[in-house]
Length: 122
Image (cartoon, rainbow, N blue to C red):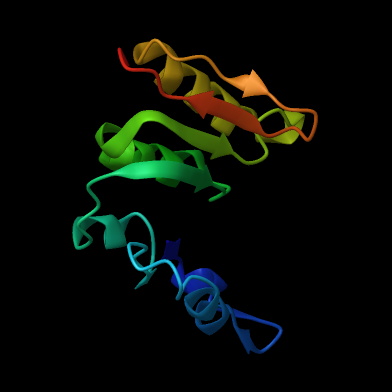
């Protein structure tokens, strides 16, 4: 789990401490406090089975996806927050270009999120 420094405190509550507590029982889960995508350079991430992206920035999301995409295991999935919202056209276009290059398809969920399941050949 990576937690951006921009979202550490919400209404005076330290959400990193809450996330740390919530993930404490998952011994193979890493918690990294810092800004994305820079924290990916100092974090050893080898295998990813679930990735949820919600950075509200096409540039930073693309940088993060490029850095971690090889680590997504076959059968692993990526949830793209706000995928089908009209106001986020730049992110929508970037995500479609990125998935097309990897021969992947995005399933649009009723919530507007996108779901990608990595198959063995991608």
